[in-house]
Length: 204
Image (tube, rainbow, N blue to C red):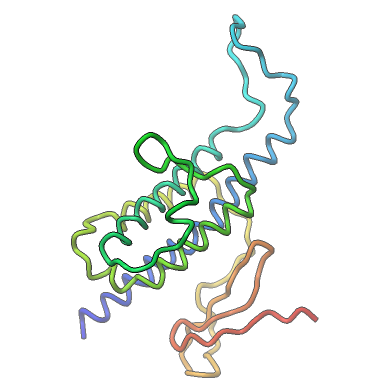
């Protein structure tokens, strides 16, 4: 019983970090591109100038988004290798490849980066039980979670504030484990973590 409870606590902790990745990458890519659009590109100096060249955008969020994505892909590939079966296309193909391994996000829009990351994360969430019981992964899950936390610290997102679990009980199972679901445009609905009942946000 204790081991099952420990696994449940760990799984929720790990799933929380996984679910942050798509939104964090979307935020960092949008931040990089919005800054690029706001800059005067004529300020860039040509190669060979005696003065240090100034990039027309903030390179940090773009590079950090690539780092988080590459970390997620490398972790996902390790999981896929160990558990076998089909893996998401984004995990196999959706990346900018260096000489030996994935280096980051391929050329795409922020919303496309969000979609690819979500595809990988959704698959990893379905593999959480296997990940929790695979000791050969060593500290790889912790390293991924650490990168997610670092990026959240560097680039805080201005998403609506909410409590992790709402005080009212789930009408289906009675547990107080209802949490909001978020999409690129904001709140999309709610889900109970105990019975997995899902509600979509009303549009009218």
